[in-house]
Amino acid sequence: MKKLVLSTLLLLSASTAWAEAPSQLIKTGLATTSQKDISKHDAKSVVSLAGNSAIEFLNDGNLSDSEAQALLGFLDIERVARFTLGRHGRALSAAEIERFTVAFENYASKQFQTHLSAFAGANLSIVDTVELKPTDTVVKTEIRTENGNIQKVNWRLLKRENQWNVVDVEALGFWFAIEQRAQFSATLDKSGGDITALIQTLNAK
Image (cartoon, rainbow, N blue to C red; front, top):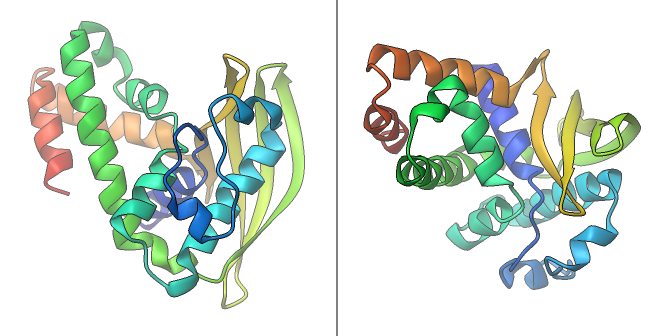
């Protein structure tokens, strides 16, 4: 569970769909970026910008509702949510997938506010990038917490419509989205594929 919480937070804090970023980015001194402008950033720059945005939001030790939403604005929420449904997603209607995506986003926001304060005062350093394909890259980083602990973290990014987005994060030896898919699949298997049961589980978190 500790591994899952850490990876959840890392993935969310690195999410990178900059469209319509809220005004809290101005408060932190970070320039707002439009959907068009994000195409100018390579994968490494996206990780640096998103990770440091999350850290700077935490200067006061807390994450407000609007700041959590600003960070969620960096996440390719539809891609990640659909992936975590695994094979069950193929049997769902567009309306059901939309309902799940909303619940997944709300779940992510609550997890952000509950746990992300542990990263206050942290520093992120980019170590290397590994290109798997021209549109598929892993950015390797180290995160040094305020107490001096160092965590190696790998960020998986895909390029779609000329824009890089973080779609998964590896920490403590496993990938967050893959782990989430396994847990969600277990819930859906138990309920006979009832997406409402999974949505209720996420809403209860």
